[in-house]
Image (tube, rainbow, N blue to C red; front, side):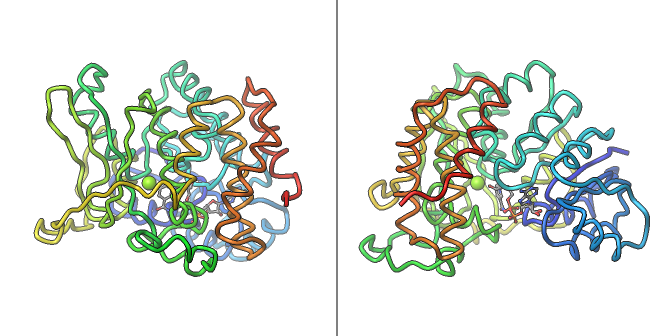
Length: 379
Ligand code: NAD
Ligand code: MG
């Protein structure tokens, strides 16, 4: 039996991961963490009876305990997440949103042999240090993000040989506002922005998709995961989300990874790697996966794409501030405290204020991330 812990089991990735392990043989759930939805965490825990759970506060612990039909150990608070990643396990799935996953990730790398990572914010903020740690400890780090899972599988076809790669391409759906006249963007509401055409995801990543910030974060994520130069990571808009990533080889082949947009495929691959296990989730026939179209992104209407890449290239404090400022701005937009267009404006203001700091260690990154998030939203 392979033991598995899921951080963020109550979210979009977490619940789909549980769907996956219901049919993958040989996986035993050891731990789950939840943050706000205790009823769902209790339901999951009662179904799988993992011996360890983690929740954010004593109040949540009391609420949860009242709904459990068995007696697991329940860790509490930020330290509780750290305690959860120190229990013995074969595989960890990191499906918490935002840099809240950074400390548990750093604690897990030396201890856990196989980490499936859905969270992209920690790679954006601290990818350099994380990848050094992964190398030092020999951790198997497999991406769950669909484009990165696809790219990983294309890279396997060339044995990860950098000399074989001309460039790679990440596809973007374009989000709900692909093709919409940018002069109407000021009237976009959170409800409009949360309506993703192809994927059913958590609120934060849905807004990031609507601004195309998500693809910018993914370029930085790909840079760190695969050691690719920023200029060798291209982006195209592909509204059907069927081709997830492409790799062009130096001898002129274009390798593409295709499939119905369903996160359960990349989640399963990340959990079972290097094995391939049958899935009950049927692929679509090729006739339904046809009419593929690709477009240049509209970099003027969606300026966060290029700003992300620029911050990724500069490195140091830039991706840390950029990512933290985006987490703040998205939250404010969801609470209707700022407009859709303000998201970009807020990030630029934070970058101007914080760009003269230095970061060398994970502690520096966590401190800067917190400082940005604690700063009143600039106006
Ligand atoms: P979500 O909002 O649906 O779920 C987030 C999970 O994290 C929940 O279990 C929540 O309880 C927990 N959480 C939230 N804040 C927390 C905190 N401060 N401390 C501890 N736990 C906390 O998000 P999601 O859509 O599942 O995305 C999770 C991560 O995976 C994100 O980084 C996202 O970018 C990435 N991702 C998601 C998808 C997708 O299809 N949903 C695809 C690719 C990548
Ligand atoms: Mg993605």
